[in-house]
Length: 252
Picture (cartoon, rainbow, N blue to C red):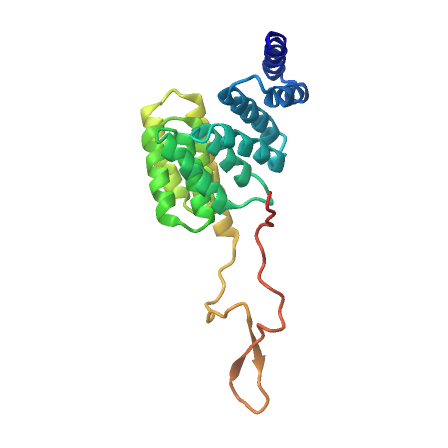
């Protein structure tokens, strides 16, 4: 047993050093060995799985990261970090699911309500699944918990930009600038918002104004009907292609 423990600690040390040196492939190889060590505690095994998942997320290997996180959840169910990483694994995956991401972030928040990044990521997931009230509440909580955290601010700005609310983003970062006037990272976020607003204003000026026309649903086509002096609408829903799917889904 003592020899097995010695080998496990040896693998741990190599994994940590590899992570410190930025050698993710070596770190993953050692962590795979640690994660299967029967002599370690459940908490130690779960930590190995979470570390492996973090490295895999950086490599955009989302499905494999989720497998490690499921293993970590089975070993240590009430760990907020596991659920936070699971949310990231669903959020970043082109084949992922924003609803499952939001569910994971909410579980992380239930276990650690003070984690501002969980609230900020929940806001983005909520926007993407059209849960506007939840998104507003999450943004409000995230900015209350970390009003000058550049990581939180950047995520919230991106979320508000996606939803076309740059003015709201400007209000948030202006408050952050007031609270931390000498913070270079906050200044960079503030400048980015101002740049995005200026670009949006330029685009609005260059876009020619169009005459107002009645709104027509995308599955309805305007045609001239024989024998009629007026324009009528024909339902073309049965012959047009199906709705555009914004993202592909794959269960993993």
